[in-house]
Every structure is written in C-alpha cells, then in structure tokens.
Image (cartoon, rainbow, N blue to C red; front, top):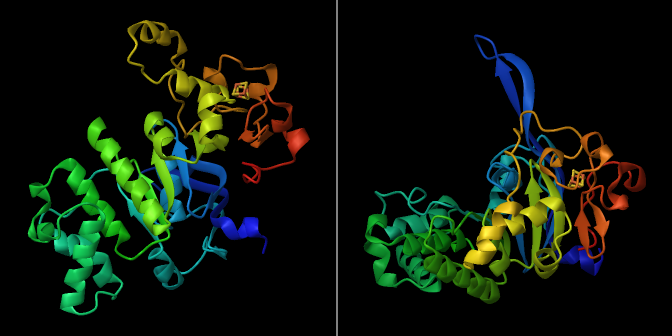
Length: 346
Ligand code: SF4
C-alpha cells in the first residue's frame, strides 16, 4: 500500500442512498425513489478535518448515517482503515463502531434527561463492555469530563443543569469514551450561540491536536466550516459539486453554486449587505424526488450553458480543486469517462 493510501482513514466511493416512494392503500406500489445521496465520493485523511457543506436537505446527514451504516447504502463502497464496510455484518461492524463516533446537532435532545452525566458519558463503555471496575469506570468518566473542559464533580448532575455549550461538551465526552479514530460532527454547533460555537470549535480543534482525531464536519454554516476544516466538499441535491482545500475554496470558488453560497453569507457591513441581495441564489431548492435533468443546479445557475439541462457534469480536476461543472471542459462525461470520480487530486 502506498503512503498516500496509508494516510486515508475513510474512503467513500460512489455512495448512493435511495429511498423508495410507495403509494396505494397498503403503500406497496413503488412509484419512484428519493435519491438523497446519489454518487458521492471523497477521501478522509488521518488527522484532517473534512467539511461537508450545503443547504438543508442536500444529503449531508444521510451521507454520515450511511458511512456509519446507521442507514443502509443503496450502492457504493465505504472503506474504513482499509476495510470495505459497505456490506459488513452487524457483528463485524460492532468493533469498528467503537472507532467511528458521532456528535449530534441537538445537545438538548441527544442527552437522556433522566440520566446523570456519569451514566450518559459512560454508557458507551458499558454497551461495549469495556467499563472495567466501578472505580475505573468513575475515573474514566472523570478523565473524559476533564478532557472536554468540565469539572469531574459535575458527573452527578442531570443534563438540564447545564448550558447548551456544556451539554454539547457532554455529547463530545460521550463520543470520545471509546477512543475513536473518526468523529462525525453533524451540525454539532448549529444550535449554539455564536460565542459558544467558537468555544466548542476551539475545543474540537484542541482535542484533534491532542488525540490525533479525524473529523468529518457537517454544517450548513460556511463560517463554521471555514474555521475548522482543512478541506471542504460542497454538496447540492445529493451530489458533491466541488472539493478543494479550505483556502482554495473560500478564496477561489469555482463551481457557480459554491460562488453563490459564499456570496450569500451575511456581512456586518451595511453597504456590502445591501448589494448582497443581488447575489442570493435564485429560486427554490428543487425536490430530491424529482431532481432537474443534467446539472441539478441548472435551474438556479446564472452561468448555465446549452448542454447543462441535458448532460450531468462529473467531478473532475480543475487546477488544485475538483469541480462538477461544464464551464470546465474536463467535467464533461466524454472527456472524463463515466461515474463521479473520487478525490485523488485535492
Ligand atoms: Fe451552471 Fe452548467 Fe456549471 Fe451546472 S454545469 S453549475 S448549470 S454552468
């Protein structure tokens, strides 16, 4: 195996998650499918943070759940640390699940209000039967609380006795209990005030440096993704339309959707803000049940070409980025061959 391949912790290849649409009295007649994720490919290197960004409903969270096999993929490969887990049995997945953990969006809803923090943080240790003696269990929970900036003495309290930021720290402590390699953070700071968001993001970055963690960081908020990510993938209607390093993406966005997303970020300058109205993305997000033909962004794209409503562009190298757009000739199927390629370049 090459050193480049060794650096890859997670490889997602042409991942598809389609949900059947059924009708009829008994809902048995299949009339179509919702292509929530439709050919997503990317690599996640050890120790990096890969940001996955896009509007609500674009398939980011479904991608995360499929990677963890909490949703069954319809097609594609998920390779974790060299092992294809796309079709692994539940018994095979069990030890691997210890190494892949998730931090959820809602620190209020994801913590059981009837459990003390000690039980919440220590629950994965018990589920995976690695809790050890009662004393060792208490010590480990205290270590985890300390790791996320909470006092070990808080272990006896209930979730309602904490602020939103503290509850998210509890969620992070629980996710770290089994010493994972990969942490999938799904809108992990979206429910928090901006000042608290910064604290939790800084905590995640400190933990990454200390523990060598790899993050898949899912968010709709570009400023959050910019703060924490090394590389970023932009999703639109179930597909990745651009992958680039953080600086490349934010300084030289190539895909018209990425450009439009960046242009729609509010600024504190009222003059800039007044002009910004002209940059808002036109139209509504189309339904994933019936996505537009060709390039899915074409009904909203101000740069659409003749073939954009007929031919789906592929994700191909454009300078140091990878972009799926006919403005870049290599993204045409004839030039690139079939399928959405993995990100070998960026
Ligand atoms: Fe716009 Fe065409 Fe590029 Fe799609 S392929 S983003 S419609 S220019």
